[in-house]
Length: 294
Image (cartoon, rainbow, N blue to C red; front, side, top):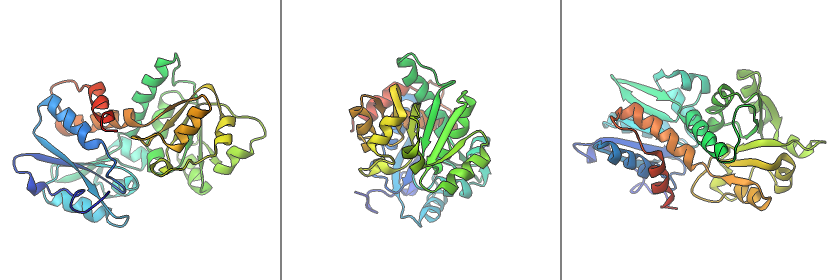
């Protein structure tokens, strides 16, 4: 349960430590603290990492307060990645391309933003596909959703050689806007997926919506069955639970994976930016530590 007393972090309460946090709505489910503290232990870095719950209209206020009180860095989860990009005074090329940010940090008096979602997803997908003798290059991919999570991964997928990339969204105008930014992206309506006259088989379907935080899926099970073949992968960016999307895929005999690996990989990228550790981070150890809390 999100409460002001539990999911709030004041950097001034941790003298002698650099303070970092993750902010979102909801946020109580987040495993980012255990992941970053695992990295900190590996690298012998004296930090504290917590969580901040923000109401939907409070992101800018909460983030500004955190940094004004001495906070060093912040990870951003749903639904604030677009606002985080707008708040950043300096933007990395990855953030500029995505027009969304999941990392903020203070450097030389200026607030920087970055997007590590793309690299986090790519590294995790490569690991998963390698396990079943597949590669990402040349794969046929469908993304569900057009929010900040999706915006951060389109360009990295294309950079990896995904030339057949479709994106379906409930509000079609948002999918069209994404296609204007990325011309080779094919925009679809969610209802288009159910109305295809011929089965469309994707190698990978990525659920980039927040439906998994509840108990729903962006597409019905019978629609999912039409879209996937026996070696397809159903990937939900939500982690920590078997989402309805994942359950439907598993019941259809399709491999279903949550987004924990992506979370850990993108966290490692942010941690390296923030702390510049002198040791290599153990990704698998962080995955194990986070999954143990499920």
